[in-house]
Structure formats: structure tokens, C-alpha cells
Length: 467
Image 1 (cartoon, rainbow, N blue to C red):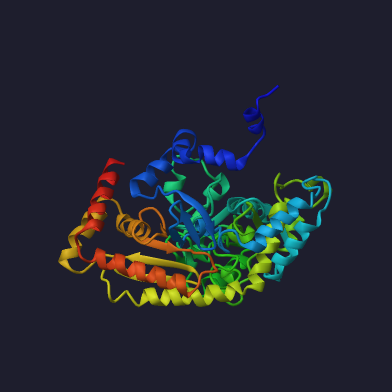
Image 2: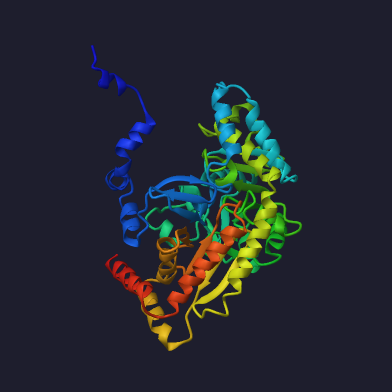
């Protein structure tokens, strides 16, 4: 007969497991996962231990709050643990549905597709996968099959995912290095219509995939570019793919960012990230009727493109709840008004700080770019950082925002002097005040040309040189 204490430990107990092993989190990652992640976090002082989260905030074991201006790279559009989405997940689990039988047509995927398409009435059908890169892979496959052509055009500095197909349309060499051969796709400069037309004349282009606002650096497509590109593509019987994985689901103040430009109606639209309220992986590719009917042209081809966990009940319920919250709580309107408040208050600081070059973006997708100062006092430190590795000054700003003010942000990309703000779409004036006050304090410190920030800069230089 088992002893009482042994019996108590039978079975799986998540709470007990976390209590017993949670303190090993960084050691476990270093030993079993990407060993460079804990190393990087230790180096820049981001090795925090967050105990819980709600809305736009985290809390540590001491009860201190941290403002989240990163939203899990945009996944947490509604903030963490939104009660409506949370209840929907409890409800769908409690319902005990016959999920993923693979040989039936459950209602939730159809209902979510119907709701998604209501935001893009020129599109007709949806494929559900599990991530942004899967949504892009789907669009690439569908475009190639529907047009019978092999090549896809993309923009320099684009980011469309890291699986092999989406990596082939990734505009950054750092992500592509060492993974060749990739698909024979071609990069053009964003906004270069002449280059687009030149490539289209070759007659082998299936599609052009583009982010309406690039996540790397937060660069918008030039006014009129998407509409003109669409006309060129259709004239040459090629398709326009809008990658809205980060910009979609309200991030820019429109439901889709391409809707900012009148007359733009992409043939395929990729979404993910915020669609499930941050709980369950989900991605979706929206497209025109004729494209889907060409791919799924017969019963023999019914499974020619599928995903094992695509359309699962938890993801579909979370998606439906998320879209209900978007409507009920006027999230798009909040993204527009709060985003404009934040952007305008930060833009007003450009003339005050010579290290601050530009503030740009739309809705709650904002880029803060730093640039070479004019004064000799600051120019020496800036030049020293740039010589070691471009992007170190932006990291110098990100670190005290967290360490001193408990605000989580990110540098917008490798070798960029840009901080990207993509907070939950539910933040308000209180969070804007907190961020602007903190950013002002950090920039005041940076413009002294000495002190803890610049000492940390020298540490970053040593790390960059060692790397």
C-alpha cells in the first residue's frame, strides 16, 4: 500500500510543477532550448521573472507592475487574459466537442470565416492554419498554383516568416544566411513601381507579397503605391498578397492596414497574431473565390493543402470571441485615437532631442528612430557605438526603459536604430503618459553624454566586439 505522501503526488498537477521547478526557468532554457536566449537576456538585463499578467501589464514576485509595449510581438492585441476570450475557451473546453474528426464540417470554422470575411467583403473564402508563416506559405502556394507561375516578388527589408517558403520572400539576409537554396523569388525596393513592372514583364511572376507597414523599421508603403501595384499586377495577370500578420486585426486603426488606401483589394490576405486574443495559435489566409476553386478543383484535391491542427475548436472559439471584443469595445477606434495621441506626443520631442530623428507609424504601430547628433559632445559616443554595431544606441534606450521605468519595448530589427511600439490595442491615456514620461527621462539622461547609460553602451560595445 502506497504511503499517503506518495499518493498525494500521483497524476499531473500543473500548480505543483510550477512551484517546484519554476525557479529553474533560465537554466532549463539554457540546457534544453535555444541556449542563446537566456544568454542574451542576462547580458542586457532582461532576465526578469514575471509572476502574472493582465491587460497591458505584468507583475513580478515583489508586486511591481511592468507596462507591456510589445504585446508578445503583436500577439496580445487585446492584452493578456481578456475575460471574454478566456470565458470562450472555458466554454469550448467544457462543451466536449467532437473536434478535429477530419471527416465532418463543424460550425465554428465556418462562423469565424464568415465573420473575418465581413471585414474584407471583396474576398470569399478562408484557409485556417496555425501561424503567420503558415498563412504566408498558403498564400504563396495558392498564388503559384492559381497563376501557373513560379516566381513571387517581395520588398527589401520585408519579414514574412521563417519557414522555407516564407523565408524565400524575407528581405533580410541575416535570416536567410545558411538556409539556401530557397525559392527563386526576387526583391524590389518598396515603392519602386518601375522595378515591379520590369519584373512583371518577364511573364513568370505569380504574385507580389507586401506588408502595408513593414514591421522591420516601421516603414509605410508610399501613398498610392499599393493601388498602383495592384493595377500593374492585374494587368500582367499576377496577384497582390497583403501580409497583415502584424498590421491586421486593428493594429493600425483600420481592421486591415491596406484599407487605409482607397481602392486596394488584395487577392490574398494573410492574418495571424492577434486573431486568437493571444491564447491559441491561429493563422488565416483570406482569398478570392476563383483562387480557392482552382486549388481545390476536384474531390481528389480536397486535402491538397491542409493543416493538422487548422480550424481546431479552441482557436476558432478564441477568434470569434476576439472579433466580438473588437466590435463591442470599439478597439479600432481606440487604436486610432490612442495611437495618434502617443505618436504626436513623441513627435513633439524631435526638436527637443538631437539624438531623436523621427517618429512615424499609424495607429498603435509606432517607430521611434534615432540618428546622428550634431553636437561634438554627443557625436563621439554615437560614432563609437555605430562603429561597433549599428543598433546599440536603440538598445541603450530599451534597457533603462525596462530597468528604470519597468516598460518593456524592443529594438525594431537587427542593425536598426529604431524602437518599435506595438502595445495592446486597449491601452489608454494613462499608459501614454507613463511611456512618454519614461522616454523623456531616458532621453534626458542620454543627452548628458555620460553616466550609466553610456557606461552600459560601452558594455554593449564589448559584447558586440566579442560576438
